[in-house]
Length: 307
Picture 1: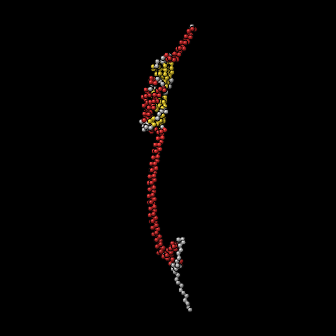
Picture 2: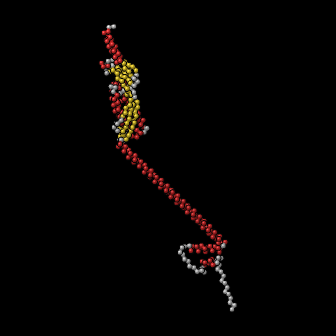
Picture 3: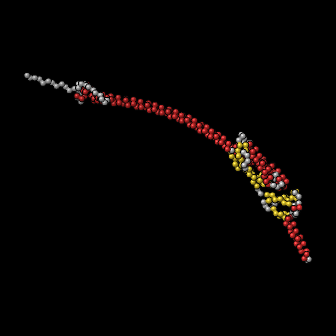
C-alpha cells in the first residue's frame, strides 16, 4: 500500500466514525425525543433506547430535541388574593402535577420550551382557581368540599393542558388563608358571636337560677308551715298532757297541788331582778311557810288564873 494514501484512508475512517457518532443518539427512561429535519418533525421516540438519525445537523439535517418524560410539578404561589362568594378575598397557594404526554404537540405549540408551557399553564391554573373559589365561600376550602374543588380545577385545566400536549395528573390546594383585613373582620365577627352566645348562656343561667330559687323558697315556706303546724299540734298535745297531769295530781293530793301552785307563784313573783315584794306575815301568800301542811296552827289556850 502506498504510504501516501494512509493519511487519506485515516481521514476517511475518521469521517466515517464521526458520521456514525453524529447519527446515533440515546434516549433514557426519563426522556422522550423529537427528531427534526429542517425544523419539521420527522418522528417521536417515547421509549428508551439507541436510535439513529441523519448526520450533519449543522447543515439542516436531522436534529434531536430531548423532552422530559418525568412527572413535573407547577406551584402557584404569591398570586393576588382570590375573591370568594360574598366578596371577600383570601390568599391561596396550590400546585399541580403534570406530564408531557404528547411530545409532538408540545413541540408544535411551544417549540418544546418547558418554561413557555408552564407560563401558559400557570395563567390558566390561576383562572381556574378563581372560578372555583368564586362559586363558594371561604369555609368550603376547609370542609369536605375541598376534594371536590380540586377535582373541578383539574377538570377546568384538562382541555387547556391537552392543547399543550400535557396531562394534568393531580391538583392540590396547599393553603387558604385570610388576608390581614379579612382576618380582622372575621375575628371581630367571631368575637361578637361568642359574646352573644355567652350572654345568651348567662341569661339562661339567670332564668334557671330564678326558677330554682322560687322552688326553694316555696319548699322553705311549705316546710316551715308544716313544722309550725306540727309544733302547734305537739304543743297542744303537751298542754293537754300537762293539764291531765295537773288534774291527776290535784285529784291525788289537793294539798300538795296547792303547795306546788304557791311555789310557782313565788317563783313568778320573785324571779325578776330588783323586785321588792312587801307582804304581811299573816298574808295568804306565806301560808305554807307557817305550816308545811298548809294549815294555821291552833291558838294556844290562855293559862287560867286560879287567883
